[in-house]
Amino acid sequence: MLPKSNPRIQTRVRRADGRGMKNTRQMHRDLVAGLQSLDQVERGLQTLPASERNLAMDLLVGLRDMMSTHIDHLAGELESEAAVMQPEDGFTDRVKAGLHGMARTARLRGIRITGQFAPSLRTVPFSAGGSILLGLVEQALSAPVASASERNVAVTAAVDAQDRLVISIEDSAQAGRESYSIRDLGRWRQRIGELGGELRLRGVPFGHGTTIQATLPVAKQAA
Image (cartoon, rainbow, N blue to C red):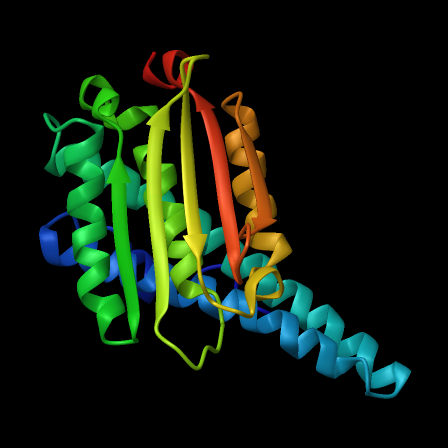
């Protein structure tokens, strides 16, 4: 029987200082990457005899559920800690600070992160989707992709004519669509949908890679 919780994870999640937030973010990233790797394990299990395959699949489902629960919990902790540590900053400042921290680690893996934010976002609060943007970038960085050339992740955000926050994360990795776990994106799609928004996954126009695009109603999010 698989354990329902891990005291070590819970202890680390409770940390509220800067180092604790950094550890929590790394744990979130590692768990997301681990969850995505289970898709490859599941494909490998299909080669086993039926009796062994069924038992292994039951264990895999339990492990996936446990990891998903921890990922959701860590995401909530990151959002709460960010709100406590930087309560006065707006959307653009908070997002740029978050991306700057990710970029330093990403460079060690040959990944270049760029960001472009519309001037109208200066008056938009971080609660209007900032944590979702940073979470989606984390999702992209955790995707198990392999690329022979330098990988670029371009992040853009703006407010459209319908007062919706439009987030776009363009990943140049040639493995593209197949690198993103449907289960993980499904959780993001559900969360964004509950907020009145929409999440889409599509190929990069006139090139290789994948674009994660999300739209959120600014007024409803900021309320």
